[in-house]
Image 1 (cartoon, rainbow, N blue to C red):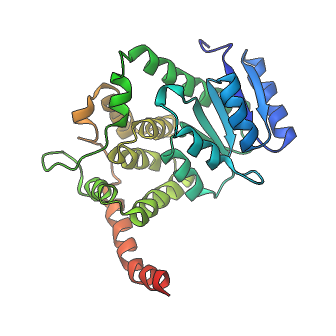
Image 2 (cartoon, rainbow, N blue to C red):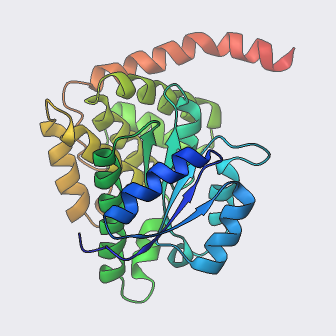
Amino acid sequence: MPSRGKNILVVDDEHNIRLLLRSALETDGFVVSEAASAEEAIDSIESRKPALVLLDLWMPRSDGMTVLEYLNLKPPKQRPRVIVLTANGRVPVVVKAMRLGAADFLEKPTTPEDLRLSVAAALEDADEENAEENGDAGEARAQIPPTPRADEKLSPGLARIRQAIWNQDIHFTEYALGVLFRKAWGDPAWFNLLGAAFEAEGNRGAARTFYQKALNAPAGCEAAARNLFRLESADVAEAGADVDLGDQEKFLAEIFAEHQASEPLHSIRSHS
């Protein structure tokens, strides 16, 4: 493991969980520090400059989102990679965490093997980005927002997501990503579609994570393999084009129909 020796910060309010994670990481040769709250985590990030943060999203007082929001105020080069720890069923929270820049998520309780794979992937991505950067080119590529264009080869479903994001239709965007994530939690093949949605949003890091999860599913996912290869080789102008949705294109239309049917009720509730 090429990233052995790097500092990893474990953030969780439960001592036993911190101990288990620390033991597994130190066995793999990492230097581990701990924090029991968001405030301690922020202090440790500033003083220790960890390469990676394992972040529990549910803690008393201020939760893990506080840490992610804090990191979003920092320049990209000064942000550590973040893997969020969450419980099954916390779908909206995980979606928000990924949109705030989390590189991956692990369900609690996690296994040493899942932890090892997730940490290795996150640090490998960070090393590759650092190696590719010349000046600020890498940061500029990651920060360019998606611009709707008539000639982009997006599917109708992804074009709808892109347009909603561009128009700041937060309710629709959160709804679509939340539905996809709930389905992916039960069937990993849905991670390919979720990756495509994040790519349409312009979040290449999250897109890469979800394509990889679909590819690593027991049954595999050929569409995810093609999307991952295209994403790694595409320049900014091509990002989001020619996305392979496999057999799941039709499900996007169903999601949009469900959302449209629920909009009158949502409107009534929001004005009551």
